[in-house]
Amino acid sequence: MKRYWAVILLLLLGLLGCQQEAPVTIPAGPTVTPPPLILRLGITSSAAPFADLITAESWPHEAAARVQFIPGNTATLYDDLAQGNLDGIFVHRVPPEFDGYFTPVAVDGLVILVPPDSPVTELTMAQVRALFSGQISNWSVLTGADMPVQPLSRARGSGNREIFQQRVMVELPVTINAPVPATYELLLSELAATPGGISYGMMGAVGANRPVTIAGIAATTATVTQQRYPLTVPLYFVSLAE
Image (cartoon, rainbow, N blue to C red; front, side):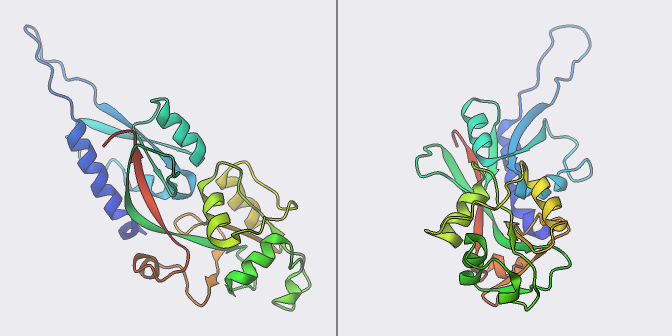
């Protein structure tokens, strides 16, 4: 997925160019090299693989700043940005009331996930809604296998949850019987171990789970980049000022 994130890396390099500190001049004595500026960037947990691209090998050694990524829940990231704890954030959703700076830097794909051993390979949007709302409670309706459907959802404040509700569920609520793991990482591990499980996330971070094809189109770098995949989602860089 490296090509998938390349445009974000270019953006970050541009940001660092704008934030380099002027060298400190010491009147006398040995030259003192100032410590590097730490650029604190929040990143939504479902986009965390991007942070892996910023390594000691790929980051310019002469850069006057270093990047520290802080993964977290979208709502928490916005709070930390407002309080000055973060210099910028990477998120999949910008609230309508936000009046700071934001720009799309990449495209991502909201994917419907099933455990690795699930026989399910393709679903329609209507079937996804029925599975998450509880209208379909047994996989036998779709696959013939007698197994209860177990949806897993995201916590409140998750950008993925809001996008899923708006783009997929629309006016239908997710069943109250859906467990809500505390973190995205826990959701992925619990889903992988749940027979009959189904959940959602972003295509760059699925753990051991498998995305299903939606409406006949798989989530791939090509279909998302071309925005042919029906659940293509922008990834935004957000800050308080440009």
